[in-house]
Image (tube, rainbow, N blue to C red; front, top):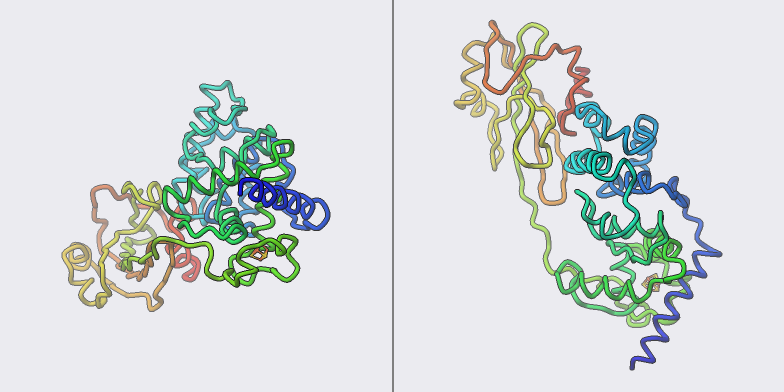
Length: 357
Ligand code: SF4
């Protein structure tokens, strides 16, 4: 049995490396990059972001902060503004924190071993393996959604990929398969293979070099593997933003809740777990403080929607023009012309764009 497994492992790695050598045409702007800072930056940007979208951000970051020490010295709000639109802002916060740690504790030199890299803020086993292998050719296998999909399908593994047991099993198998002489090439190959051949939907099994020994292909199981233990139930949230204005000024605040929009800015927000009528919102305690001193209250007709991994956000905007400048704890007045200098969540930016703010 062990011998049979070894043969299968050997087949997998050999065929994958051959495919990479002769047929892998996937072009990535940061492919073959050896600078750990640039690899790190690209990997962090690519978490939850498509390559096409992430590329422009990557180029802008490299241009403005060509080294980790330059990033460590950067002004926080400028970095957040540069990140605006990418979402999942904890990535940006960790990027800055890690740059500072490298500047202060490692003399501005990116650590060159896996143990030190994986200790850095915002760097998990996947990113640490990518940096270790691509920059320093160290034998650490990357394991992400692409990799678990290929392994689950090829070896017919039904262990759910999102359980502790599954993560351990896939990681150990990937380590076994890794070409220890060429870890960087192997990791690049398996990531590219998952993105272009063994894709989540409609994989190219008919022309796949692994098909001959692929469990899923032979047993028509491709659409059933990999297995996930739970389906994500999305929470629906309703955001009613009050655009409180006085002359050319608008009221905003920096969000400090520990969520994905922390450190971004927002208008006065009334949140509900269900859809409410605009009339009810305007008459609610939160809005009454302003509507009593308003010369105009006007809802914006468009409903803005955003699908996130675990939640769906619906946002409505209501303009309130005041007759006097009211103070509100935690909020500050910003001139409309300067609103573009502040970083906002995506839905607010969509609104600002559509309304030429
Ligand atoms: S044969 Fe199909 S399912 Fe199997 S590894 Fe190739 S592309 Fe993936």
